[in-house]
View 1 (tube, rainbow, N blue to C red):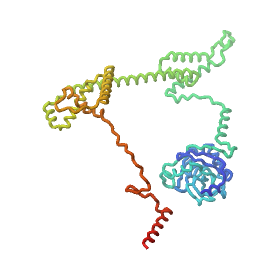
View 2 (cartoon, helix red, strand yellow):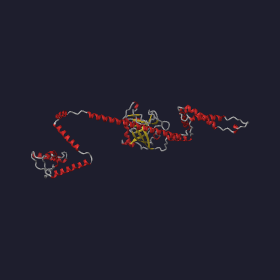
View 3 (cartoon, rainbow, N blue to C red):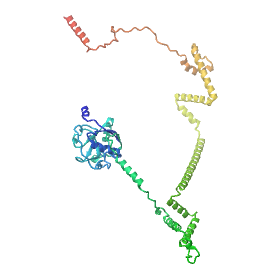
View 4 (cartoon, helix red, strand yellow):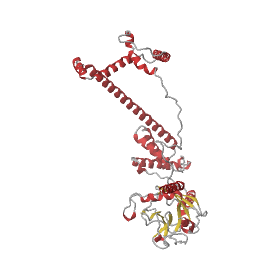
Length: 479
């Protein structure tokens, strides 16, 4: 394998592919395949491969991806058309981890590429090799073969490319097309004038009424926006016309109609009209937003109070249920019939002696536990007294030697009560005796006894010579 790596040319450029199967460090041969590498790098910079799947997996052969449609028939190159193949004598399909362009025929390269999963000599001089997977990321390739592969070499659950990152760009003159398009759009937005908003009353449930009122308001404002009547029109000059302006009468009538409607501020129609005017005009947006914020806060407060009330009701119900359960338990324990003493006596008779002793022992400890005081100063003083008593007993056992055994029948009643404690106190007076410290002679290696065993290697040349000499001497002796 070392000669393969030596024959391959040095790489220039590096791209990181982050996929669901793991990361892949791809080093590029930008000098040997400049068109393919430039196409691959620019598509990576533009995010063209982000979210695309590996739509074809052939075990021990290739893993193909780079098609945004996921069908195996899509994809475009940065040149706007398929570009030519680029073959090199030092780049061969002799191992796994090579990255090459996928095509449907000669000089038909676009955006699709594939990884080799083994030796693929049948692809030599048919597909353009432009990179290789390096480092420990090479061991992520077998993960593509672990899934279920269906018809037409399509995996059931295909892996996909999460994102691409160009770590070392061998072509610094590359400018992603996405950035250019964004700059053009920004310039168009700057030069383009903003269109005025139009009122669409059809979006509202009361749009017809709002539209009629809007027409009346516009008619009134139009009448008032005209030039006022001059003295020539309204003076008492007989040579002049004494008739009032038509627009004035129309304006007053419209004003009266508007005033009548404004008087009904409390009606829901008036509120609808106000809402329509506010939406159409767009002048009272800050005030309207403040009102909406106040309403939202009020809703939140009401919702919070409702939740607290529900929580309180649930807690009260739980407390009532617990009280009922507690009362039922007390009633049941109070009404429980007591067992007859005769039955207990019969059960005690049935028990064996060991069980009886165990019950007596347990009863004794229960009585002693009941006599213990509660936690506090009295409990602490009792503990200290017991500790002092134990230390005194230890000192007495150490300094006093055990006396002669007493005859049967001797001893007071008090000694009889403490006999159990004295029997269990034998460990206090116990002594540990070491064995005799006699002098032990060391074993002589030259002497052979019953415990001696041979540790010499029979295959050693010296031991072989000794055996031969002993055999010769024995033959001579027999002669």
